Length: 277
Image (cartoon, rainbow, N blue to C red; front, side, top):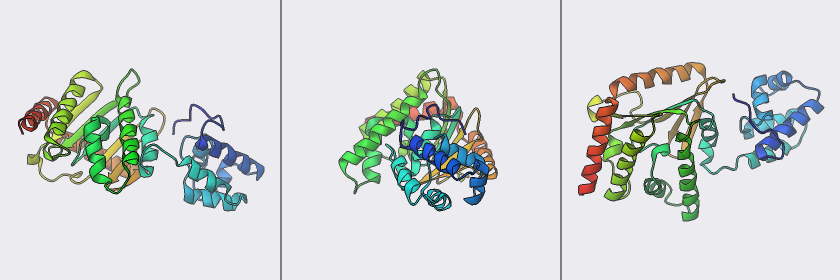
């Protein structure tokens, strides 16, 4: 995986975790490969933690503390490193998308986070997190809007989105919120050449991602990964065979979705429908 641009141990909790892991490993006279063998992972995986590329994991930190005789030191640092503006289960994927060369996403029921307006994001968060404080929801919405800036500028990744037609028809918030959101989709597609947006029509029937949110990320100097998400949970997939399977399924979904021009026309038509309600 791509190396961290800033390995100053005092830059953030994750960098400090990495520097402490390296200090403890070297103090024990172990190479990355030797330590990896003792905690059942690869040398490169240990290296990713030491260079602050990857967020540490609590279960692995427990093993590392046991092997290195560091009590609960790494476990405590791990908890600090897991503080994030986004939902904890999404934090690793959120960091990876900042380094991605291309991002390909599919959503079956709601507008993808990078393309959401503030009002739509508020409506989604309010319905999904009814028992969470308003302050906490506002922080999540703010973080989601910050993420959207990823799609702009000279270093923006190529972004391919496929959304099921249900995302255009299911009311999230008021009709005015829906109209604004769909008009925003049309504006973004017209304004940003790095974005491709397709709609999977109802007439396509069943397909591999029928009930899924999937994000495939490719990098310049690292293997691709897949992130999948459900209600209150997310999973980062790195197994090459599973990633390749998801990529093939996504390529097939591209052929089954409407062409970009027809997708844009359908989005604008749906926006008008919401406006008249």
